[in-house]
Length: 132
Image (cartoon, rainbow, N blue to C red; front, side):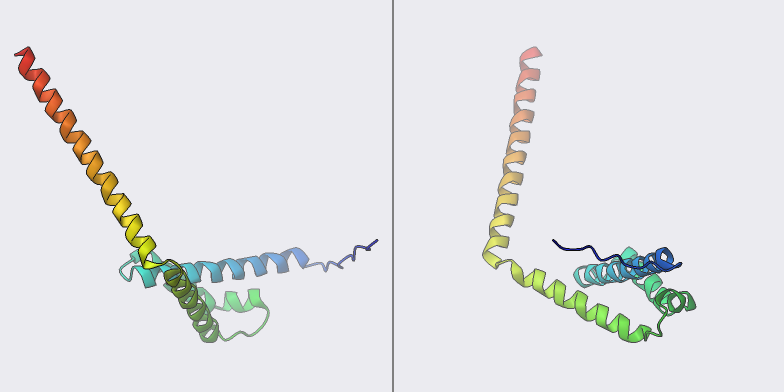
């Protein structure tokens, strides 16, 4: 039977945990913004998020939360590399034939919908002619 090891909680444990969560969420948001910018370089929202998070990483508040002197430029560079590698992995993961098949299915559905709409319009016009 394993004994549960009780982790001693300091007075500031909850605050330390909160600071850790804030930093981790900022890093995730930053990676997400960079990935979005890689896919769509004209995304205004992603660019603004990226700039705001970079400002946070370079702020005194970040130093207080991290409790350690982290080099913000090094952190930003590592997060960009991580985002690029994840974006490349996702891009390379799907074979081209799968993408083509997906596109073909999309256009086939679209063509069928347009055909149905034309047929409905034709029948509606035909009914109008009978009434007149």
